[in-house]
Length: 305
Image (cartoon, rainbow, N blue to C red; front, side):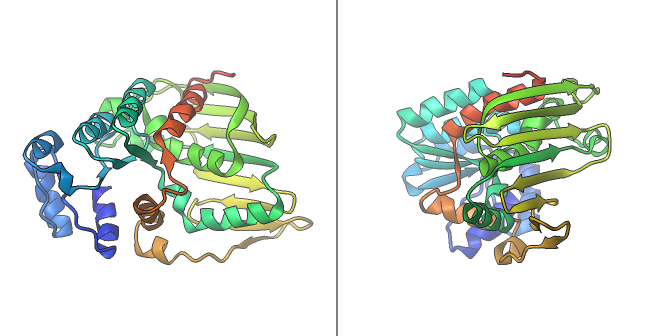
């Protein structure tokens, strides 16, 4: 992800210091981007650097190191941090980071770039014009046959729902509303993901909209979100694209969106960074992620509440 952020930062004229862990990872980064990164890890970098020169930081490290890296930056005096989703491997780690941020009077945001897709922005306009969401559904099926062969830490694979699928869950609840009640079911297992492989559930949001979700990691499928209003059904499948069905017809049409920045850079990253450098509108504060961890845990474990 560091390689995805860099072109956006350069386009905005931002002065950047890139810090990597191993000499090999830095060598690859330098070769791919043409930017000289610094090896040795963030802890060594902070010890030998005057942090007053830095106003912000972006944390794009493996999930197992997210909270540790963010805590180091907070304790070094960085006041505004954007950390890759999900922010931590568990809620306890996130609570610790949140407490540190409050102590240091700093702001920490969790980077869910699907919130900043052009398709999402357009959907929000339609939802507002239509008077709000009446119901929605989403699917977060993952491709198990691909994931099990990935060269990633086994702990990261075991936490794949949290590390990856929450992109979809976050987008659905961002557009449709947060749950007030939810019934959750889970089944199946695999060697790489022993928790569950099949998910289903339904609930009601704090504003009264009904929702449902499903996923089957042992079968074909893909990510998707559908948002229903009194006038339209909005389709995100894939999430970068928006289609609409008007009430009174079965025809589904593409919605024209201004996706200049999503075409030029990794979708959502440009507008996410612009928000991070300005008022933070649309970004996910760490305390909101703390609340959402409760939903994530219930969905993953199939626990109702």
